[in-house]
Image (tube, one colour):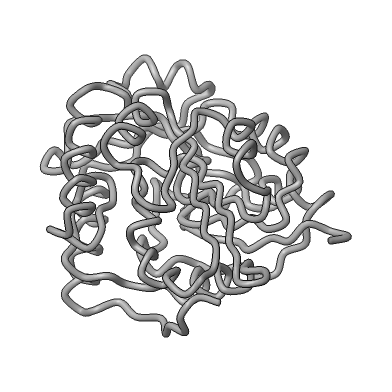
Length: 272
């Protein structure tokens, strides 16, 4: 089992995270586009070399112990734990073993955040599934002990079991997110943890553009705000919801006259 942890966010870190989020709001989310392609034409994208190199530099500092963890290239000197995620990770451990497929996990951000809690496990296999350029950097410069990088889930499952799938702040940035979710179901992961996923209070999804604060990096990209009920229905034929939780950071906000919020879920496959 992982270490017993309380929901802990140091005040200094909470301020930094909230300031980061508030700064994001000011640069922000805007628009209500009828297609991903229309939004994409007005964006710079996520895969340019400036972003990749900044994320790589931050990840290398974490690996070297110069920072505790990074998120979107922003370095943090303190670790924080969100109780619902810790509880879900604990509950996913079987026979003191944990195999994680971290889809869209950048250069191991979540691995480095939680790795100290895994030291008592008899077996840990954490594989990040990412875009090709991230995988290349990950394999050559970031791979560490139990941390691996692959381009597809199929490749990841050649060396580990389908025990746990992580979807941390990733689905809203996938152009064909709904089709992707349908493709994830047949892998029959025993558990799925979804976190920091964007939702909107209206009957249908919304496609907006997110502009990243320039002090992080210069970038803009389309993102989904999902209708929660429709989103969950993509999973519920095969999965039960064990827990659901509103994220503390970022906090709910108004996008025009519509309320948006970030939420997470812990799912278990039925009949397992």
